[in-house]
Length: 207
Image 1 (cartoon, rainbow, N blue to C red):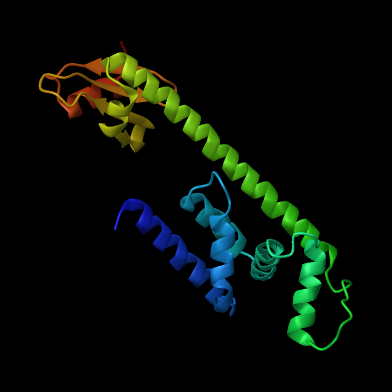
Image 2: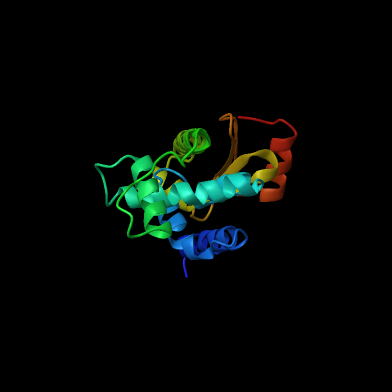
């Protein structure tokens, strides 16, 4: 299984546990579908969102209700989420009753939806900023090593301890470069080992 497959499986398992702990495991498919339709957000960020919601049992149950409404709204595009929620409540509690009462949906759902949407926007913004930073760093590496951007992306590895990335030329005698998140860099030739290269960078050497 590829890396993306593993991430999706991790998200699925997390969502199952998230719903199961509230006694709502049967709704995990709807919650998962809702999360999968959020654009520009990695599964790690979606799990981060769920972790924040997970701390409050009441909020968690409301979130699961909200995702159900959001999911069903695709099939009822002309109805408001309040109408769909009321319809779901009617179908669950009294299928034969044609009257739809919306008064049971309190203001807290509006606040919850606003909070969730704000958090999603925040995480999407962080993700966008990270992509832009990564693109800038990749371009610096490509210019430094004089090879195409596609090549530097393939031949790179993160250095989390200093918030930097190590890039190298995939040829005998090729150069390497360490670039941090601020764009500062240190280029080294093939005679310099990775450990020595990293040590020099930590010591403040740049070129």
